[in-house]
Amino acid sequence: MNIPQPFQYQGSKRNLAPRIIDYFPNNMERLVEPFAGSGAISLACAGRGRGQKYLLNDFNQPLNELLGLIVNRPDEISDFYASIWRDKDTEHITQFYNIRDQFNETRNPRLLLYLLARCVKGAVRYNSDGQFNQSPDKRRLGTNPKRMRENISAVSMLLRGKTTFTSLDYREVFCDVTASDVVYMDPPYQGVCNTRDQRYSSGIEFDEFVGGLELLNRRQVRYLVSYDGRLGDKSYGDPLPECLDLVLVEIEAGRSSQATLLGQEAITIESLYLSRALADEVGATSAFLSNKPHSRQLKHPRVV
Image (tube, rainbow, N blue to C red):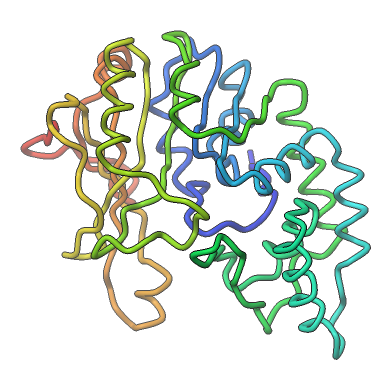
C-alpha cells in the first residue's frame, strides 16, 4: 500500500517506516508518538492495519494543530491551501515571504501547510526565537492543490476517529502512557558539537530524556527510540547509555541528500533502540539491517 504523505518533512521516518514497524508487537492497542512531526509512523501503522488508536503529540503546537486539521477537517484545510497557492507567476516568491510573516505573527496552522509545501527540500528551520525562517524553493511551487486534497483526504481516512492530538511536553506524555501502549519516539537529534537542531522550535535535554526512559522502564512500557546514527565514519549524537538495557538495531538508510550533492558515497545509518520489555516480547536482538534484500545479523551484536 502506498502510504499518503500530508506534506514533505525533512527528517521524517516515512521511508524507514516498514523496517521500524516490523518491531511493533501484534497486541498494540494504542501507538503513542510524543515527537510526532508529520506522524509518518502512525500513518504507516494505520495503512497496514496495525494498532487501534493513535496519540500524536508534538510540542510544536501549530504543527500538531495542522495534523489535527488534516485528519478531522480535511475539506477546510484543502480549500484554504487552494486559496493561497500560487501558480508560477511573478508574485509566487513574494507570496511565500508574506505567508511566512503572517505565520510568525499569528501561528495559524493553516498557513504552515503552505510553508511546508513550498520551503527548500521540505526542510523546516526555526531561528532562536522560534520563528520559521526557511526560504522558498524557487524551482518548485509546492504540491498542486488537487494533489494536496487527494493526499489530505487519504490521511484523514486512515486516522479519523482513531487519533488524539496534543501539544504537551514529552514528559507529560510519558506520565500518561501505560503498559498496553507502544511508544515510538523520534526526538530532536543532539546534532554535532552540541548545536541546536534548527528543525525544532525547542530541544530536549539529554539527561532528562534518559531519566524519562528510565521511568518507562520501571513501568514496563514498551517503546522504540530513533535517536543517534552515523554518516559514513562520522557519528552524530551520543548513544543512549547502557544502564537503560536497550537493544540496538542499526538501519541502513541510503546515501544522504547532502552527500549526493557533494559527490560523496557516505551512507546514513539510523539507530533504533528497543526497550527490553518490547525486545523480549517480539524476540528482537541487536542487528544491522542493510538495504539488500536480506538483512544480516551483526557478527557481534551490540546490546547497549
